[in-house]
Image (tube, rainbow, N blue to C red; front, side, top):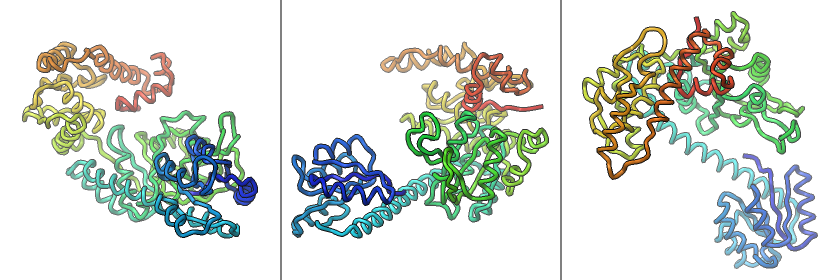
Amino acid sequence: MSLNRILVADDEESMRWVLSKALRKKGFTVDLARDGEEALRQIQAGDYDLAILDIKMPGITGLDLLDRVRELKSDLLVVIMTAEASMKNAVEAMKRGAYDYITKPFDLDIIDAIIEKVSKARELTAQMSILREEIKERYLLEKTIVGNSVAMREVYKTIGKVAPSDITVLIQGESGTGKELIARAIHFNSKRIGKPFIALNCAAIPKELLESELFGFEKGAFTGAVERKLGKFEQANGGTLFLDEIGDMPLDLQAKILRVLQEKEVTRTGGSQNIAVDVRIVAATNQNLEEQVRQKQFREDLYYRLNVVPLQLVPLRERKEDIPLLVDYFLGKTCTELEVPIKKCAPDTMNLLAAYDWPGNVRELENTIKRAVILSSDPLLTPADFPGLHIQHKGGPTAADELSLEALVDMKLRASLTNLDKMESGDIYNLVLKQVERPLIRFVLEKTRSNQVKAAEILGINRNTLRKKIQELAIDIRKD
């Protein structure tokens, strides 16, 4: 984490001028304050990396301001300046949380040394913060990736083999199979743990914004670019960049991604400087990239760059032995999140769940379990709590897409009568809309042979809205 913005607060104009000139010459953004009150206002309004405060100023003193900083911006590092080289001042400043303490007059070399020390401290703090979060997430991931089937054991083996290296991995699988979880597992078991894991869904961002998201932009590069922004490649420097749904990336942008992979450097939009990046790429798609290459919708050279190690996630219908484990996991997770007693599935309920094909895969199973837990007031879930799973149609929307209105009303009435003291406003209207929305979109996509542009026109919605709905509702797009 680089040092960028600095606040200098001193009632001596000459000191403010000298420090601002020296720091700006080194490329820092410097704001000035002539007293404690002005400095406090700027700290409250701004986002500073370092504050250099004089110990004696009119109104709020440097030490009092230091106390306020600890309350308002605990991560802001503060250096105290004083003309009185007393042990009492030094001890008091450090006791109140100052990062360092310097005595006037001082050479600018002292400031240079402090700046370097502050930069290293911030970098170390950032790395430790990332490491703590990643260790926590790695622990959670070990509990989240559930499955003991032959297919999942092969996935675990592949993760173990590829994680230690920097080799590029292409994860392929239907929507809802857990591709991002696998990407995170690869990162957290690699030597890059402690560095960032940055994820970007290429299908969720409009084409015109995707390039600046990936490569960043310079201030003034376009209307609205009021300050420099780092792209995902720079944010992931030293770590892993997960490019989800890469099959949806526009062809012109694919060429730029290929260049980054070859040259290992990026150029921000509106900039001319080539910036070196050290990033491991893990990509994912629910599309057939080989077919897209044949249809000239995906660059062949980029495909071979990404497909160094292919990792195929099988759909849930092909590893049904994992369903009981997943059901128990999602029941425990949902009940814990909702702070309700743990619920279980009756044996015939588990048989029903295991027999269903789950076109939306693990994501659909999780949402179905969550809905049943919310709607059922009983500790034991029965087949009646999953009315949409009793019948499966071949071709067109499945019965899981369409929740029986009679069963839904019945469940809501039972829940209300059981919890009369906790009755809330009815939400059947919204629930029914959600149930109708998914089969409608699936039906239109089926009739248009998954042509999303045509489907969006028929539905009367924006294409980006349709894409988001496909993702949110875990709709499997199958092309003939």
